[in-house]
Image 1 (cartoon, rainbow, N blue to C red):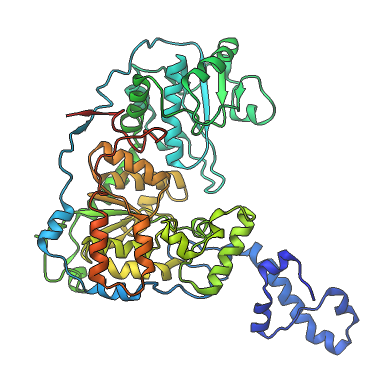
Image 2: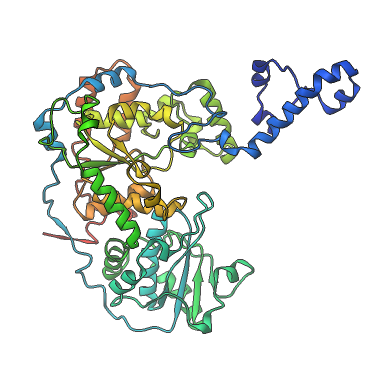
Length: 543
C-alpha cells in the first residue's frame, strides 16, 4: 500500500514494522473482510485512528516541550556526548588561582567611554502637530532596535512619535505592549528635549489604529519603506504625506533606517534611546535584582559539601560572588536550519531533515554541504556540550555560577547533561525564583526575555552560544558599558571539534589562544554594521 506524504510524515513504515501491526488496511478492504478477520482488524483501525489524532490532541508529544523535556517522537535516541574524550578530561581539570583571577578580572580602560547621554542630540527640536506611528514585529530585541529607529525617524521628520505598537509575535503569541515591558514615563522624560512623544493620539486621530490598517488599503499607511532607508528617503516620501494628512503609520518598520550617512546627532540619539531611555518596568527590574542577588550569594554549606564542586577552596576564590550568563540558543528551528549533525544518530538526522523540508521547502543553502564542510566554515551552532567545553577550556571550573538565558534546548535534558556535569551550579529563572515571583512574567516571552536581558547586563561575563538578536543587542550594550563579553570563535571551534583525536591540553591551548582578543575588546563599527552592536565611535567618546 502507498501512503500519502502527510501520512508518511507522521507514520514512517518502520514504525508499523516495529510495533508488529503490519500494513494498515484501507477502509474499503476492511468491509471486504470476513467477520473473523474483521474482529482482528478493527482494533488496528482504532489504533491507527488514535495515532492520526495524537498530533492534534497532544502536540507537545511531537516537539520539544521545554529546556528540560525532550520530544518523544522526533528524537528516538537520546543524544549522547559527541566529544567524550574531551569531556572526561574537562571534568578532571583544575584551575590555578592566577588563571581564575585573570579570567574574572574586569576589562581595563580601553580609551573609550559611554557618552551618548552627554552628546548634543537636541538641535532644532520644537513641538510638532504631525504624528508618526510605527508597528514593530519580531522578538524583544528586534523591537528594541525598531523603537530606537522610530525615535530617530521622528527626529528627522520633526514629528511627534506615538509610543510604538508591538505586534503579537506569531511564534511566541505574546501580546505584551510597550508599556508592559518598558517604563513609558522614563522613556518620555529622558527624550523630552529631543523628540515629542505621546502615549496616545489626540481624539482627532483616534481612528488610526492597528485594526484600521489591517482591514483595508489606507492612504496614511506606508508599507513600502525600504530596508535601511536613508534620511532623505523619509524627507522625500514620508514628510509630504504627513503634511497632507497630519499623520502617517509605517508598517512594517523593522530595519527601516540606514546605519550610515546620517547626521551625527541622529546617531547619538539612537544610542541615547537604546542605552539610556529604554528601561524595563519596575517589576522586571525587581525580579532581575532578586535573581542577581541569589546568583551572587555563596552556595549553602550543604550543597557545597554534597559534591566536590570546589576542589577544596572556599569563598576566597576569584570567582566567589560572581556569575556568567550563557545565552544558550539551540532550539529546533536553529538545529534544523543549520543542517549540521548533532550526534543524535540517523533518527535525529531524519527528523531534522523532515522538519527542515516542512518549514523551508528545500530553501536551506546549508543542506547542500556536508557536516564537515559546515563545521569547517563555523556555520554550526554550538551544542550545550560544546559551549561547556569552550567555557572549561577558557578556565571556568565546576564552582562557576552559570545562569542560563534560554527558552528551550532542542533534545531536552539529555542534551543538557554534559553541560550540567561541567557546571553543576547552573541556574535559570525557574530554579532561582518561586512561582509567585514569576507570576507576572510567566507565559509572556517578551517579559521573560526582558528578565534575561537585565540579568545579563548585571553579569560579570556574558557569552552566547551562537549569533542572534539577543547576542547582538547585549554585545553592543555591554561594549558601551565596558563589560566582559566572550565571542565564540565559531570557525576555530568547528575545526577543533572535528578533530576526534585531539588531546585536552592541545584543545585548551588552541581555545585560549583563539579567544584572547574576543572578550569584550572595543571594535570600531564598519560600514553597514549595526550601531546597536558596535556603538563606537558613534555613541562613545575617546577618553
